Image (cartoon, rainbow, N blue to C red; front, side, top):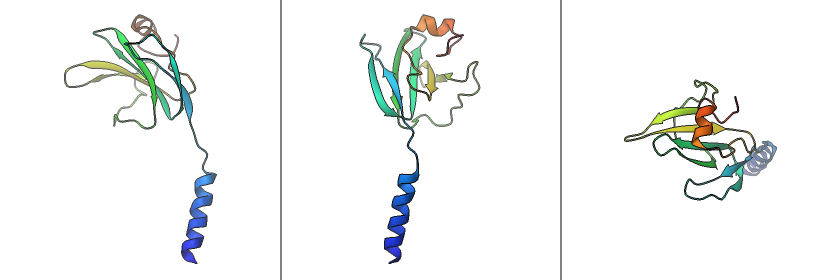
Length: 116
């Protein structure tokens, strides 16, 4: 009986939790097509300062740990240094907040996805 009550409680609890998902743009630096992807927790953009290329997409959870996005000019992008290269990584949490822009436009916006 306890197992049945526990199962019912968990089922009600799981269905009572609202799900949060957004839609994002998806674009590879090697392809001009812009796609739309749904059911993501966050959208992202990555800008390579060396090649001046960009990639856009969305994710379910961040694979990059301990990165605070609140300490940059606009709070959405941060320059991350990997072993042999640096990349601007941007993250946002509203529908289609990662509109594909060029690297030049990204720089003109003060290294942000948001318009100045």
